[in-house]
Image (cartoon, rainbow, N blue to C red; front, side):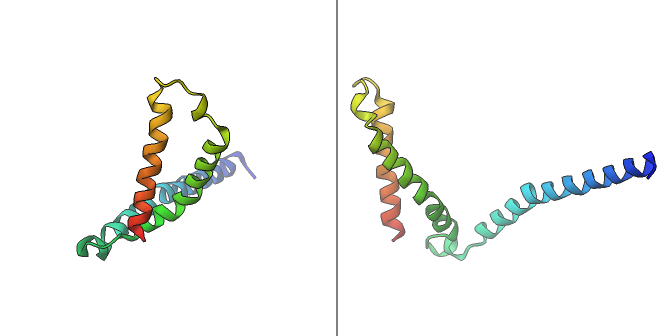
Length: 104
């Protein structure tokens, strides 16, 4: 194979790869957003499918994080002045619990 044919094949391979990546990372999320915005639950006051999807994807990770936080006993060894280390995990858990309750 000549150098010119190799260069042309490389360019086409690179172009197709970039096109595929562009479609995957730009077009697919755009289609997902359009579908989410056309959800009938947004017009009727119901719970959109995107909320259910996010909750089901987030729930196992949040549970794993919460169990790790409890097992580490990190909060028991923090200074009383460390508000971010003691309050924000509690606030996040309360908001997550409230969201779970409202989705049911």
